[in-house]
Image (cartoon, rainbow, N blue to C red; front, side, top):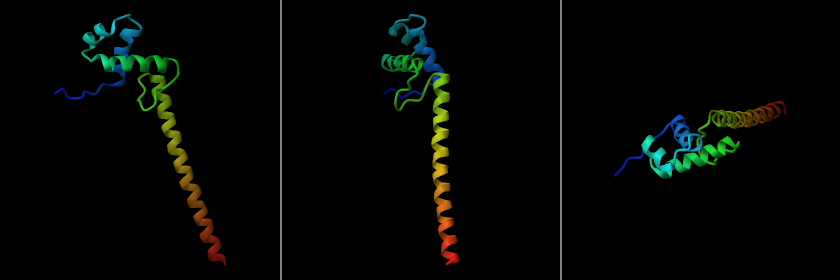
Length: 102
């Protein structure tokens, strides 16, 4: 039984680049990088998509530009959550203030 290996975004980008930029076949790139063809094909498709400006849903970006976009999107989601918490807290405090003055 083969254990699942974990690969860094840099490794994935480098492996996919062999196929896309250096004209290796999938088989040649798999041998050079010691990875399976299914994973390599997925990385090639992902790199092509990211170079076109799209991030595949549910995947961690492998290009620096798309990684940065994902980081910014995560920050935006966090800030939006914090903003909602502050709105609710403000409403609660206003409610308490009104109740105390009555």
